[in-house]
Length: 132
Image (tube, rainbow, N blue to C red; front, side, top):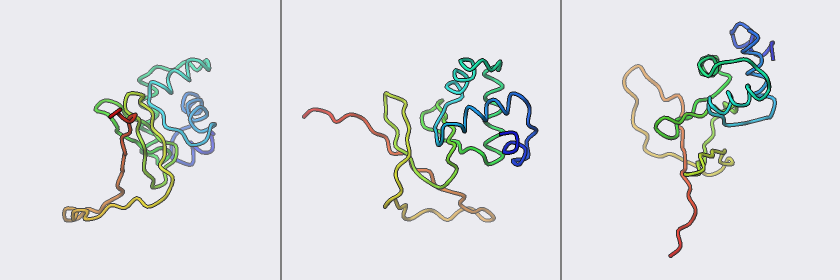
């Protein structure tokens, strides 16, 4: 993990390496800062929630993570940085990838002069079917 952090242009501090190990050791995941902090504490990593937030934002800026704003104050960090979309289960605060398929976005607006569209994030919100 030291090499991955270093190649992203970040200094491989002990805490960054420990957090990167937790983030990337289990494949593609969607985690909030609070969830990663809980994992770190459970793993015996002495780190504050503020440090976790800082590291996650540094990893995002370095291209290691993708940020997903789902609910007003709820932000998830996705270890899969490829272009893809998500399902979000309301009430459970669970997010997962939509398998690649026929998701298209039509009629995107023209970006302002000097700007280009970097990507489009689609979050499809789910809930249990209501009885009729």
